[in-house]
Amino acid sequence: MLENILKEATEKYTPMDKEYTFYFVFDDDKKYTIFAKNDGLTVEEGKKVEDANCVCKMTSELFEKVWYENYKPGMKEIFSGLLKTNNPELLQKFLKACGK
Image (tube, rainbow, N blue to C red; front, side):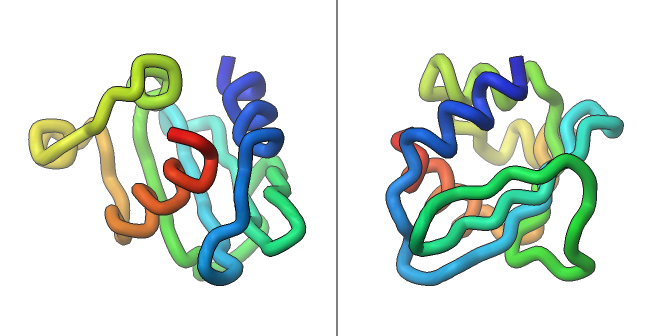
C-alpha cells in the first residue's frame, strides 16, 4: 500500500518553493528518502542523506488515513507518538504539493 501512495505522490507532485529532502520511516522498518525537486519527486528506499529537511516517523496506517481520507493529524497524534516530525510545517507543504 505504501508503494502505491508513494507512486501516486510522484505523479501528482507539483514543485514546491525550493528543493527539499524528506526522510520517512513507517512502522519503524520501512524507510524512504524523498527528493522534492523542481523537475519532480524522486523516492528511494532507505536512508540516503544524513540531514533531511524534514524527518517524519509514523505508522503506515496513519499515513494511509492521511492520504486516502484527507485526515489531518494534530496534537493528539504527536503527543501519543503516532507521528513524530522535526518540521510539521514542511510536512504540510509536502502533502499539499502532492495534492493532499
